[in-house]
Length: 249
Image (tube, rainbow, N blue to C red):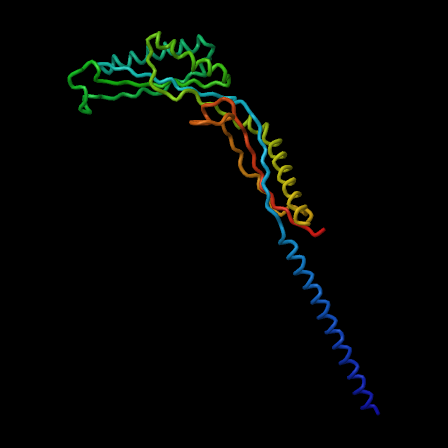
């Protein structure tokens, strides 16, 4: 009898163990299934871009004034360069530019005879060049200067062909408008995501990934040969790229 009772107890223990194993397998399978489901739901996302723009005026301008002289003697040529530099500096100061806004560059000298040129005209043996650069935060004053360079010609200063002023948006000016641009670009991206989700029968979930993107500076008025640095009025564009998870409704 004792032996039969022991066998009966062992049978029940075996049966209980099978039930526990089966239950654990079922629970584990359910959890694994839920994990796959959650993983697939998390893989559903949409990538959207939002764009925001603002018009901005440059707050720094740089203008090079390059002149060229010729001379038979390099020392005479150097003296002419210094005299011309003073004429240019006086011209600029008369138009309200400060001393620290005027920067004469180095003197460049070319010996034409050494290069096999102008052997029959010693008066133009040496060609001397210098660029005087004006840098100012008063961009309107630089614009007025660009229009008045003909007055230098009347003063005897012949300027070489130049590209005119370059107008720059400084980092300080850009940083003042960037937060609002990024905010509006991000709002535009979310609006696009909501529209996509609505069309696909989904709902917008959490942000999966976000990229502010780049800030682009362009000329405000598009056109041919529209080289941005030559225009004082700019268009600042911010692009935000955001991935949103799509949730089931």
